[in-house]
Length: 203
Image (tube, rainbow, N blue to C red; front, side):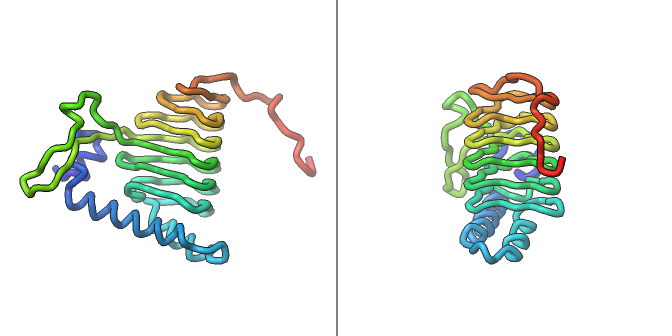
């Protein structure tokens, strides 16, 4: 079983594997190129985003800068928007639905390091290079979710559709659909209801 397959399956893997290093290098080169684009280069940005993401919907807008571990393990739906400084560490699959809004300085992190130092510490491979053992847990963010500024979503979490995660929250467990949730650790504050509806222009 290849290290990539172990990683995607949530098993212990060696991130120093040659294939994984090449995939991370590719993602860093593409995001570096994207982050250096100008506002007038929207066509180039769209092309690069479609190379970076595993797949994406019809409309996608990411305010630079953004960073990925792999990019190819992240899939987003249509009408996706992210503000400055989005970081996605997609060692496990990341699935983000349609009409999702991501505030500035958001981190979506699938990797998990062992708790005990004897498992976590660096070790030396047969070729002399150093590596550590890791594993990762997938993240699912369903349709119509808004992650406000400085949210951290940890591996293994699912956030239900039509939910809002308040600024500065650390999401360590599943959050249901249709709620406002916030805090560290993030918890449900209340359901979202018709009382939250705004009167929009022309309504």
